[in-house]
Image (cartoon, rainbow over all chains, first blue to last red):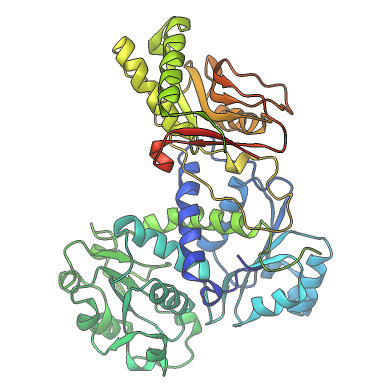
Length: 309
Length: 176
C-alpha cells in the first residue's frame, strides 16, 4: 500500500484483492463476544469531517475502536473552521499533535490530496466532493464478493444521480479494474459528459441497464448538491428511473440490490425492493466496518517503495 | 538441507502424541484442539482424527490467526503488513481443556500472542501446548506440554515444516 488511501485510482487490482481478503478476516472479529483486537494500540486516528455523515463516520469510528486505536472526531460545526481557518491550517495544527492517521471527508474534490502533500500522517479519504469515496467502493465490492465470488464478467447496473456521485466514480474504477461490466443509467441532465471514457456503457433507460444484471446499485438523488432543476419532479424521477419490483424482475433471478445510503424511499428505490429479498443494503453497512478495519490495518504498516524517515 | 523428519516419522509422531493426549486427558469430552494458522491448523485436524480413531469421540477443532496480536507489528517502518488469516472457532471454549497446536516452538512469542487471542473467546479450564518441533531459543517463559521432536538448532538455522495440506508433502527440514 502507498502512504495514503486517496482513491481507487491509486490502487492496483492486487491491492484491492488484498483489502478484500483482509476484510474477510476482520469480519470475524465483529462476530466475537469481545469485538476488539490490540493491533493499533497506541495509534491515534483523527476523524476530520467537513460534511455531515452518520454512516461513514460511525463506521470508521467503530473500525478504529475494534483495532484499539485512540480516536477523536472533529466535526465542522464545532470547530475553528467556522472562525475562518483554512483546511491547510487546520490540518497542520492537527498534524502538530502527531496523530498517525487522519480520516477526511470534505465537500471539495481533491481536499485529501492537498492534505496528503502537507501531512506526514496517513490520510484516508472518506469522501471528497464529487471525486472519490474509496472505502465505499471497497465495501461494495466486498459485499458483491460474498454473494458472487468472482467479480470478473459480472454485469453491474448503477442507476441514479451519476453527476454528483463520488460513490459512482470509485465504484466504476474498482469494478472495471476487477473485470466487471458496468452499465450506468440516469436522466440525461445527471449523466456527466464523457463518462464512457471510464469504460462503462450508458443506457438511456433503466430497463436496459437492469436487464440480466447480477448486481443493481442505486444511487441517491443528492438534492443538497443540486442547484436548479435537473428533472421536473421527484415523482416523475421515480416513474422513469426508480427501482420497482417490475424492473428488478428484468435482472437475473439471483440479483442483489445495493444502495450506499441514505436512501430516499419512493424516489430512487421502492420500499418493497429496499426491504425485499434481493436487498443487501444492511449487509453493506455491516461490511463497511470490516473493510475499514482492513484499510486501517494495511495502511498502518510500512510504506513500500519509500525509505523510512 | 537435511531432512530431520520424513512423512513416515511425522505420521508416527502425531500418532504417539494423540495417544499421550488420550492417556493424560481424563474427560475426552472436555478437550478441544485449536490450531495456530497456518500449519498448526492441519496438525490440529490430524490430531483430532487420530483421537477419534482411538476413542471414537470427535473432538472440536478451531483455527486461530495471531497476526493482529503480534508484538512486532508496526515496529518495522518498511514493508507491507503481514497477511491476516482466518480465525474460526465455532464452539465455546468456556470450561474446555484447550490443546493449542503449532508446528514449531521457537521464541515463544507466537504462543504468547495466541494465548492473548484465545482468551478473548472465553475462559477455558486449561490451555496446553502441542508442537511438532521444539527448536529451543525461548525468549519468553513458555514450555510445550506435548513435543513431537526436540531439535537443537543454532540461531542462524531455520526449521521448515512442510505439510501435505499446505505444501503438498510432509517433511521437516533444517536450512542453514
